[in-house]
Structures are given as C-alpha cells and as structure tokens.
Length: 273
Image 1: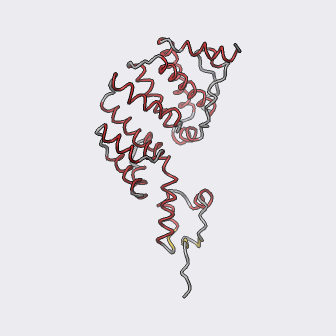
Image 2: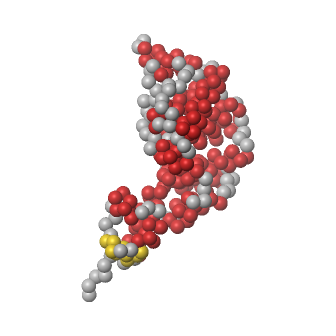
Image 3: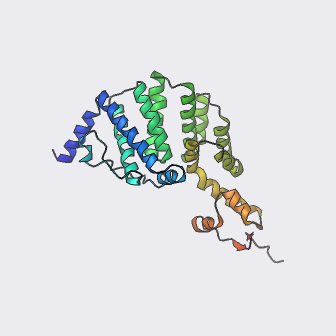
C-alpha cells in the first residue's frame, strides 16, 4: 500500500474515535477563530470569505492526513481558511461514519454549516444541513430557535441557489415554518420582484445574506430586462439602485451597452416616424 493511501486510512480510523473527534473539533474552532481575528474582521474578513477557492475536491494531502492534526498555514490567508474548511469536511466524514447523533455531533454540524455558508462552500453546507435536519434532529432534537434558523437556511438555499420553488414551499409546509424575511425572499423570487429582494437583502442577517447572494445576478439581470422593456431613458442613479451595482460594474460585468450622457442613461431611442 502506498504511503498516501496508508496515511489517509490511518487518519480516517483515528476520527472514528469519539474522543479524537472532540479533540480535532477543538483544534478546528481554535484555528478558525484565530483566522477571523487575524483577518481584522468587517469588510476584510468578508472579502476573504468571498475569495476562498471553492475547488476543495483534493482536500488535504496524504502527508497532512497522516495524523489528526491541522496543517499550519499563514493566519489570515486564503490558504489557512482552505485548510480549516478541509479539516471540517474531514471531521464531518468521521461523524457520519460513526453514525454519531449526540449533542457534540450536533454542535459540530451547526458550526460547520454556519462557517460553510459564509464561504459559500455548498459542497459542505448543503449535505451537512440535510444531515442535521433529517438524521440528527429526529433523534437529538434541535432547540426551537436553532430549528427555525436551519430550516430557514434550507429554504433560502432551495430558492436562491437551486431555484426549486416547489421544494422550498414543501419544506416550509413540512416544518410549519413562518418567517417574514424568508417568506418575502421566496415571494420576491417567485414573482421577479427585484425591489422586495433588495429590500430583504438589507434586512436579513449575515448567513441569510450569503445564501441570497446565489440569486443576486439573476435578480439583477431581471431588473435590467424590466428597464429595457419599460423605459426609453432613466437616471443613472435609478439604474444603479434597482440593480445594486454601480454603472462601471454594469458595463463591465453585465455588458450593459446603453448610452450615458451626464446622469441620463438612454436605453432606447424613439423610432423616427
């Protein structure tokens, strides 16, 4: 057996031990908190979350997997965050393999889902979200506030990322879920209501906002189509407000080719009679 494969098997077996899982989790939390502190918080931390590479299919290397320790990287860097996220996935796989559904495993999943939502790592947060709600909750019930929180995340992911409106309504009905902000996001996307969508984006918390980001570009394009069908010319500031993007960004990222003269945006010119 090659060294890489052997190292992977050894690490896998170590994380089948409950005590090893708990020690590994504490290391993950410690490194994650240090990363957040080193990033300075605020906009810089959000930027590093946003720029994290989502291609984590390789996980940790064989040498790193040879022991239940997290490889060290430079605190505050994208590499460090990628390493911590890969360690979270490694721990989640160990918990699934042991069919553990106690309070500790529930706490691990809550932490992993929240962190993965902030980095928009759908490969991590969505399977964990399903496992938490469908496997863990029936045997180790979440508190009412936590159940409300994570059902809301599932609904937002269904409607914003997957665009599966029927499934979102089904989940809402199954859990008897009622939340004004989440309901408004669902309504906004079903009815192509960009005004309500942007309004709710300013009202939701950081985790919900991250999930809403999956739908932002589609809402922006729909708003531009509405402007194109409705107006001959509009104020530049109005265009920026309904799309939540500045003019330069609209031209560069959305390919908007409308003419700008001062603050006036000419969308269509009247046909000569």
